[in-house]
Amino acid sequence: MPITIHLPAVLAELAEGRRTLEAGGATLGNAVAEVAARYPELGRRLRDDRGQPYPFVTFYLNDEDVRFRGGFSAPIGDGDEITVVPAIAGG
Image (cartoon, rainbow, N blue to C red):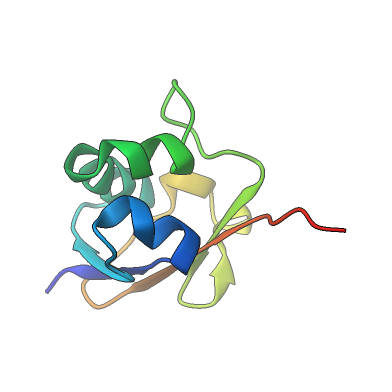
């Protein structure tokens, strides 16, 4: 069973309007790389040219901030849920 990645509306536009995506891999970085290969425009908003997460995009693995679990090195397993939260500027 794959993991599920939940996207906010602003990023779903870059994934053919899909708010949820499925991916696999042993780590969060593997899953993000798989999604980036399918949706290159989305991939450019999730990670930098080195394949590392941007500091202004937060990933939650089963409601836990992955920055405290090793970032893209965080292990993932079947049925895990990833929520992507980009920083939004406003005024």
